[in-house]
Length: 452
Ligand SMILES: [Zn+2]
Image (cartoon, rainbow, N blue to C red):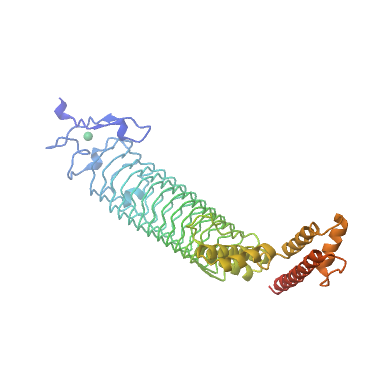
C-alpha cells in the first residue's frame, strides 16, 4: 500500500556526516502525495502530528509557519525549509538547542533571543533574519548566508562561521570570542563594539566593515581584507595582521600594541593617536598613510620594503615610506632608527637619479654614501681615511714602515716632505688635500649628528 505512506527519502549523502538516510513512513496527508511534513503548502495542526520530541523532521517543508507552539525539542531539522518561519517563542524554550538546521531556509525568520547553542546551521540561509541576542554558542554556521541579518549582541562564542557571508548584517556588540571566521565575508558588516578576542579570521573579508571599538585582542587576521574598514578605537593588541590589507582603513585611537603587521598593506590608512608600541611593521606598505601623534617605541619595527633592483621598483613610494619612518622615529626619539631610514632614503634617491639619467647627481650621491653614509656614518669616514693612508703607503718608495710613516705624515700635515722626489711630493700634496677634505667631512658628520 505504497500510496498510503509518504515515502519521502532522505539520502545519507544529503545529510550532515554521522546521520543516516531514512524513508518517511508517515501516512500521507489528506489530498496530498506526501505526509504533512513533506507536503508543500500550509497544513494545520503540526503539533498533534509530532510523534515524539526527538522525531526526524529532515527535509520538512515548514515555509512561513509559526512554529512558536511546536515542541520540536531535539528534532532533527536537517535541510528543513523554514523560509519565513517564526521561531522566536519556540526557541526561547530551548527547542532548537542542538537542532539540525543545516541548509535550512530561514530568510526573514524571527530568531531573536533564540537558544541555538550547539545548533547546526551549516549552509543555512538567514537573509534578513532576526538573530538579535540569539544564543549561538558553539553553533555551526559554516557557509551560512547571514546577509543583512539583524543580529545585534548575539552570543557566538566559539561559533563556526567559516566561509559564512554576513555582509551588511548588524552584528554590533556580538560576542565572537574564539569564533572561527576563516574566509568569512563581513563586507560592510556592523561589528562595532564586538568581542572578537582570539577569533580566527584568517583570510576573512572585512572590507568597509564597521569594527569601531571592537576588541580584537590576539585575533588572527592574517591575509584578511580590511580595506576601508573603520577600526577606530579598536583593540588590536597582539593581533596577527601579517599580509592583511588595511588600505584606507581608519585606525584612529586604535591600539596595535605588539601586533604583527609584517608585510601588511597600510596604504592611505589613517593612524591618528594610534598606539604602535612593540608592533612589527617590517615590509609593511605605508605609502600614503596619515600619521599623526602615532606612538612608537624602541620595540616597534618600522622597516620599509627593500627595492629589488628591478626597473619597476616603486622608488617614489619607498622614498616616501622611509621619510615617514624617519619622521615617526624622530618624533619618538628613536635616533638610530631615524638614521637607518634616512640612509635608506638617500640610497633610494641615488637609484632615482640613475633611473632618471641624472648621472652627475648620482655620482655625487654615490660618493657621499660611500665616504660618509650620507653624513650619518663617521666611522666610515675614518675607515676611508685609513684606506687612503694605506693605499698611498704602497706608492711611496722605500721599505713599508717608512712609506707608511711618510703617507700618514702627508695625510695629517699640509707641507710636503722636501726629501721626497718629484712624484713623491705630488703624491704627498694630493694626500694632504684628501686628508684635509676628509677631516672636514668628519667634523661635518659629527656636527650633523650632534645637532640631530
Ligand atoms: Zn514524510
